[in-house]
Image (tube, rainbow, N blue to C red; front, side, top):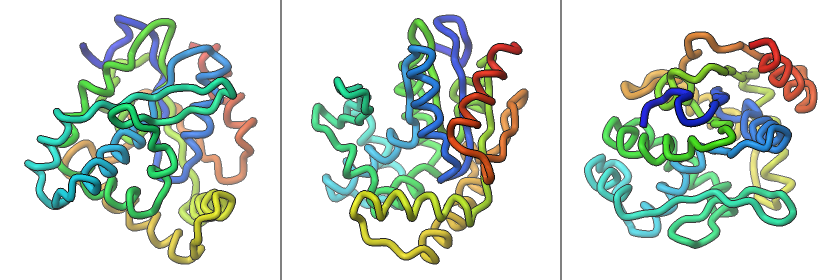
Length: 227
C-alpha cells in the first residue's frame, strides 16, 4: 500500500505538539464521516507497551521488535469519543501522561521504529476516506494525498492549551515546564534524521494561535471544497 489516494481519499493534518491538530482532525472526520488516524497515539501506545514490558527506550532494535508483537486500534464509542486500544485494552488515559508523551517523542526519532509503524498507519486508509493527523502524514506516510494541511501555533499558546488539558483531566502540571517540554519536543521533531517535522509539499499552512477550533475546522473544510 502506498501513500496515495488509490484506495480512498486522505486528508493529512500535520503540525507540532499542541497545535490542535487532534481536536480539529476528529471534528473533521466526524463531519465528513471518514475514518480517523491519530499517528501520535500510535507512538504513544508503543511507548505504553515499552514501559509495560520494561524495555530500554534507548534501544532502537528492541523497540522496533516490539512493534511486531502489538496490535493497535482506534474505536469510537456510542457517545462519539475516540479511544486507542493496545492489544484489546483501552489505553486512552495512559496515552495522556507526560511520561508516555516523552517516551513516544524519544522513540519516534528511530528510523527502524518509523519504518516499522509505516504499514500500520497506512492500513487505516479505507473508504469512504481518512483524516490522518501527525507530524509526517503528508510528507511521508500519505505523501501523495491530495488534501494536506500544516497546522501550527506559537510554543507559548500550545503550552497554554496543553496545560489547560492536563488540569481539566486532573493531572498536576506546571505551565512553565509544559511550555519548556513543548519547545524541547519541537527541537527533537525538527532535527531528527528520520522524517523530521516539516511543511509537506502542497500543504495549506494555518497558524491557529488566535483562532478557535470551529474557525480552523471551517477553514480546512473550505480548502477541501476548493480542490
